[in-house]
Amino acid sequence: MTVVKIAPGQGARYWKDNDCLENAHICVGWGKVGDLRNFSSEDELRAAVNRKQYHGRAPGAASKTAWQLWTLRNLKFGDKVIANRGNSVVLRVGTVTGPYRWNAKHHYHHTVPVDWGISRERQKIPPQKKWNNNTVSDEISPALYKLITGKRLPNDAAVNGSEKPAGPRKELTILGQLDEKRRVLARKEQAFLRKHLLGGNDYGRCFLCGEKLSVELLVTAHIKRRAKCTEKERRDWANIVPMCILGCDALFERGHVAVCSSELVVRVDDPIRRSRLSAILSALRGRRISVETRQRKYFEWHSKHSR
Image 1 (spheres, rainbow, N blue to C red):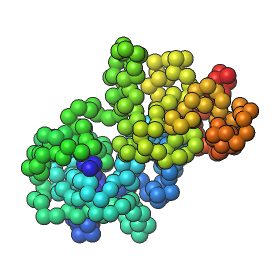
Image 2: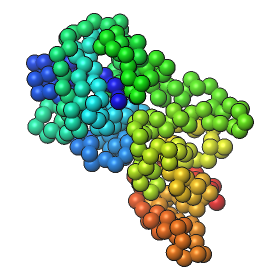
Image 3: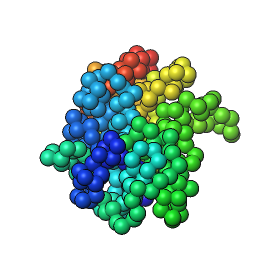
Image 4: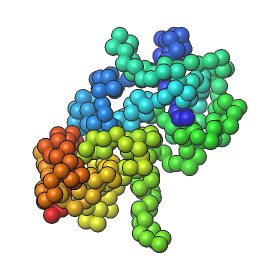
């Protein structure tokens, strides 16, 4: 179960008088992006948000907005939505009753059906600074959930508000040294990046082959070889994409495939015809890849230095 807070417009303008409560849904803006069901990955959505909503000039804001929209799009039956006004008023807690919908006739086109029940309205809570300037947020700790609902947070709830800093990008900054010594050298950011690149979902799409796979079969990969990155480049979200361990991550790491001008180029031939490798290479060859402007320099580095 996922628990999120969603503000129904600035100052909760679309709560009671303008219909979230009456029409049993929650809605958010950013309508220029269009129907979110048209996007197969958060990366694809992020590129569209930057292009359509921010005119290609705000990759950081686009990344934050895309995460919020992707979280809304992937809410499922039974998930909990906390409608809020500002950072200290809870309007009501509802339960998601259906999938995301695009409503072109609505003032806020992105909607999700919610049963708001009969819980008390306008509950005052201590100010939640992490909610500031965020329409959608998963910053709800077990203690806050209990304060709002009077119930314990279910064990399977996908929220970690008591353990997370203000947001995914800030966490990358304050993690400190990204490598730590165990029996092997481990990447401390790996689990975190997987969670936020995939929006906390159990499934995601490989950036190269586009296959929808379980999180267990995906890794977060640096486009520019990690050992060659500066500290700033290691922490740059434009340098990080999800790749599957079924072949794409290994092929890309070894330079056997590269992205050139938004096209996937295969640089190796399999001498054994009709093998599994041949099938993988055939599926990848010539595949079109949506590349954001900030990613291009990293793909150009990889294409030049990976072989």
